[in-house]
Structures are given as C-alpha cells and as structure tokens.
Length: 240
Image (cartoon, rainbow, N blue to C red):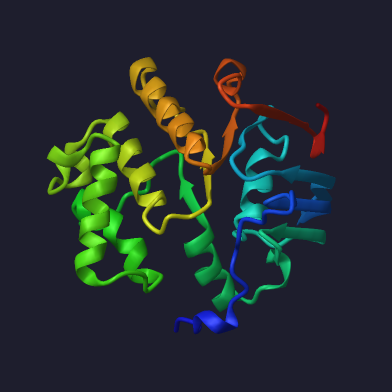
C-alpha cells in the first residue's frame, strides 16, 4: 500500500548551501559466528547537489554498505543519515519504499532488468510503482530516456537481446525514470568493455551537468578519477 504524499518527508534541494546527503557518525555492525563485525565505523560525510563522487576501496572496505545505507536498503546501527533534510534512518518500511522511489535511482552491477518485460516496460515500471505521471506520460518519459541513452531502437526488445553495455544503459534509463536527484551506482562498469564503460561514464558526466548527484562505487582508481571527488574507504573508515 502506497502512503499518501502528505505523510512522506520529501527530498528537496536546498538553496541555503546545505548538503544534499549528510552522514553523521554512522556505524553499521553485523553479528557473525565470530562475533561483531563493524562494516562502517563512525563515518561522517557530506555531499552537495550536483557532485559526482566516487567511492573506492578494496573488497570488504564498506563501499557497498555505505551506498546501501544512503539508499535505505540497510538499516544503520547508530548515527544519522539525512538526505535533502529527510532523516532516512527514521522512515518506516512503507515510507522508505516511496521515499527511495522518488529520491534515488539505483544502478546495479548486474543490471537486474526484469527479463520478461521489454526495455520500455522496465523503464516505465518505477513510475507506476511510485504512482507518478499518467499512463501516457510514463511512456512518453520512457521514450525520452531511452533516446537519451541511445536505446530507442531497442525499446521493444527483451533484455536478453541486448549487449552488456546496452543493458547497463537501459538500467540507467530505468534509474532516471522518476527524475530522482540522486543516482547511486555499484560497480556500474565492472562487466563492460572499455568502449561501453566510457559511454556510461560520459552519460554520468552529462547527468551531473544537469545537477544530478552521482554516487559511484568502484574498485578502479582510473575510473574514479572521472569523478569530481573521490572518497577512499579502508576497514570501514574514510582514509582520504
């Protein structure tokens, strides 16, 4: 059941120089058979609207955990996370689903397009789930986004008919469906050839030029250099 918009703290881009994303002493711990494991240790971090930020570190450094907390996929252990002034850590499950749908577009490493839906239908789906736009507007917007990522000719194809690079661009179009201020990506070029990866990075840079905020998890330092700022994690802490 969708919540009425009036019950949901909405994300807005503030004109008073406040950060869009504000993490305050964030800890994330897991209980394992060997005892407590601290994936993130007191992270404090601010990200402004329109920033392109890469998050780098070795496997197990806390990169994906950080993104998942910002996106509300995981719950923090302690601390605060505010996105556009909304205290994400205080939202209940229903509010979180609606907030996430309208605030963040998530691009997964393995695309996660629904195989039984066409590319067009995959892009339309988030708009329906968030109850945004009319049916006609949804398809018009999906067509616009597919043209933006150069996939208009594949609109009626199933995902398995697309190359890896095309599937990733389709996933980016889907992430932008609800016009969210933030795009979060986890190893977005990890399965792509050099040409496809470059096309994806060019697309991210174009989105930043339109004041979108991009968070990109990567282990590739050369790729990270394309971002405007790089945050390095090691053992759950920011080291640079």
